[in-house]
Length: 370
Image (cartoon, rainbow, N blue to C red; front, side, top):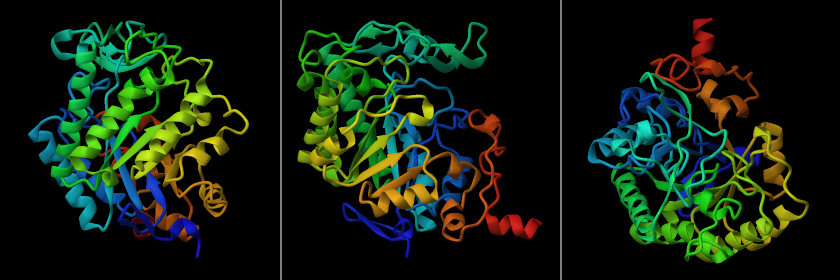
């Protein structure tokens, strides 16, 4: 039997297979509360060994995109409860991805129209937020100039993540994933090219990792380390992040710190398909020598490449994104070598209702209609 379709023990949580539905922003909620359509979307895809939800902002300040469901109040918790119940009724497992975009936001999304926040006041050149333009219409707009966070505010954001994690568990999620990738707030602090702070959250590697690790420790104390995953994107270049001198050493040090804590998993976001450069030779080996827990990777996998990575022992779980959009039954299609449906990229984001969201048929539904 292929390893891809074999069961896996994820820190005591039994997964029926090793295919993970990667977190994908869909911007489908009219407000910030998951609705019945959200629940149906995730129910349809519950055949994944594990679903990681779209990013859920941990506060209003943490939002960088319109129509994204949050996790910072009771109404949102109750909306997500409909989602987790739907997934569990189908035998699936689901983690909530906890998200704060940092500087990658726009004043129209912020409380009282204030500036977004980040490690410094440097604006992300060329980065876009999905917000309201000058005419009040939704669309892609340049990220606003941020203001630098104080130490007290950094600690407050950690508390926001802890509160969101507790709400997630109350909503029935099997765990949470800290979004530390793709140029959002934690990676903004990790990146020495951006983070030029002179306090205990800037400068040396230990200081630049401090915010992420303090937040991981605080969430773990609240809900248990076995219910916490971490997503990172070593050498990420999204959203105006630049190279810096001790980059490889920084990520290997993080691997060492994560290994000491042993979260449920570490989820690597490979940005090669998004235009990033190849990882330096030997980096992957160095990272895996330091972090020896469950490792997930996402980034352009197909069935054959996924099986090779598992067979070689390079990864424990394989995350796929776009394939799950057009194929709610992706696991069964891959298991039985059935053709995959093509995705309509024009419906990736937005509020078109069911179109491009829950109207993709399974293979069985497709055959019946034919």
